[in-house]
Image (cartoon, rainbow, N blue to C red):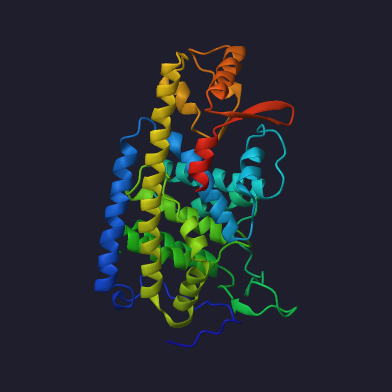
Amino acid sequence: MEPYDRNSPYNQLPPLPPEKALFIDEEVESKLVKASRRLAELKGLAATLPNQSVFVNSIALREAKASSAIENIFTTDDDLYRNLSCKEDDYLEGPAKEILHYREALWKGYQDVCREGLLSTDTFIDIYRQIKQTNDGIRPYQAEVVIKKRGWGSLVAETVYTPPRGKGIVEGKLADLVEFLNDDDKYPMDPLLKMALAHYQFEAIHPFRDGNGRTGRILCIIYLIQKKLLDLPILYMSAFILQNKDDYYNALGGVTGTRKWKQWVLFMLEAVSQTAEYTIDKINRIRALMDKTATILEDNKLPLSRLNTAKLFEQPYIRPKALMSDKLKSLNTAKKYLSQMETLGLLTKERVGKEYIWFNTELMTILTD
């Protein structure tokens, strides 16, 4: 293997897959079995829910927040939920806006893969554009993009990586990556292993000016949906990556520098395993809270249907209008019901802008744990 010069474009980035001996052995196989079992348990549990999408928006907020935090985009939970409770046509400021765009990009990627059935370079671009709110695409070949060392120090930060560069080079490497992901006859491999290898490759190609990390993490999720390992985007690994940020970047660098694929694959499989376990716990706690809320409403003869009750869990906040349905058509009645739930201790009310918003505080507690 030729030595890698981090100050020169990595145009010799090898295509996938690497030699099998570099990324799989008994230790990897054992961790793969564990991750696969936990992922299957998560998929099975989610399938028993009356409406899986009720949980997706709530849990997706945590993914959006954690993924943005990896890129040093920080906000408090209170600021996040209060900002996201603004009306759609209101202008969101700062980190909350970035996080909302991430969540929208997640849904865009999910819709693309459900419609097309396969991943494509266009899917990557669609996700990136939604994250960054831009019409930009793959970075121009003449752009001198480099990855600098994070943190403070010299005014001239040290270069840690220079991604591929040149006319048609990035496009060609993305085309190879898409083929690797989509063609299971040519590249037969467990999807979790493919996901791990492909995530490295996407980050190493670094096809966009910015937002590559967030785009790559969304691609992991929607690839598992494409391969039928999940039905909806409910596995969010960013929290694990954020907690193990140094290990994540060290493992990425280890593949680039010395082709240490095994350490990278082990990290990603552990991320899947722990995140699946985390998400199973969240779903169980949210489902229990839904049941408890429905029981309290029934005991107090508050005539909300299960559908209306479920709306209290689509976000950590709710407006009176969002509670309305075919059976609940009056805005004033919706306000009355929310006020009654506030009296019962199920919700808290706060003024946001010119209107009142009701917050599901117990749901917020579950999401922020």
